[in-house]
Image (cartoon, rainbow, N blue to C red; front, top):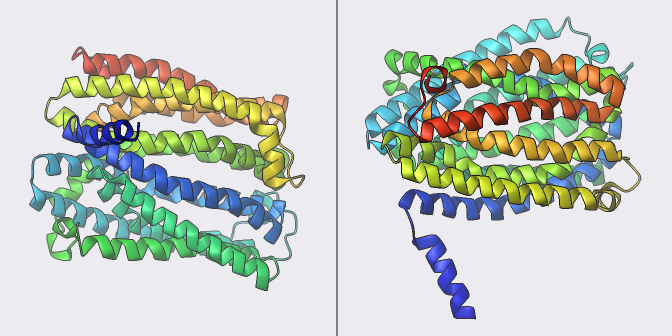
Length: 453
């Protein structure tokens, strides 16, 4: 029996296409790393709520999602670089790869500095207490707090490019290592703060935003001085032509990113305005639980974006077809897992956060269906993004961006918190239908017009 298991494990990691084997190794490594991250993430929520309070924690969640919008201003460079870098690695053109990496860093530094210089004076004239429906909030200066968070995100804006480089080389497990170390040190910091200080939103921000940033900096220095030295950014290798090509490739991704952020990050803002900061915590407790399914999916699917780019560059459509078929089987299995988690959710909430937060059943049901819809459309998006056939995704993303917030408000007022989730879910199902059609056309080499643009 033991020999049979050993043989299966050996064949799993050593039999098959090299592209698939590389993906398998990264998936298994990522699962192990993410397992630790999930445990820390779950432990952090009750610890943090007890350190501050549900309302203050809701303010942090809303502020972090608001400031995440700053990531839009990379002009799609991250995704554009991912595709170009994968192509150059597939063609073994490391000189071009290094030039593009250097140019991407240069552009992001300029953009981040300009963003901060513009936001600094504007922030002084914004009433964040009113925007966040936070009342008087006498215990903390929200304007200075927002400026601090924005500063952290502007720096992260540049440093997180190492994650793009690692993923482009089909090694997302290494980005997982960086994130895990950042989470671990954040958890340790919150433990220390909870024991030796009174609840402070300012200290919470330093722990949650500052510590992962320091880890990201150390990770970048390590990788660029070791295995990724061939693509280490250099001031001398910055080229205007490379920058222009990156901006051209990334411009469509840029608009798609805007649409995605409206879909993913506007929920907390809508909930804050409709129900108050405390309900943001309730919403995120439910999301965190079902995000276990989504995290598992993301771990598995992440290596395939760049793998699809490489396969498409080399014309390996048989491998693409096989990969999509296996991904659809995974979708069915994860959908069953989501239903099972729904059945267990009342018990899990009680064990996890006790009576501190009460999550309504209709919100859990909405989150379950959300998972099913999200995974379905995301499978096809990986191939579409990897091949660069993203014009249809652009148009559909704009359609969803325009209608999502009004629909969130409409359904939220009639159904409650669950209505916000149902709005996202409706659009994901629409996207899934359209993207599955495009995927079939790409695989069968029958894509024309908007399906091939």
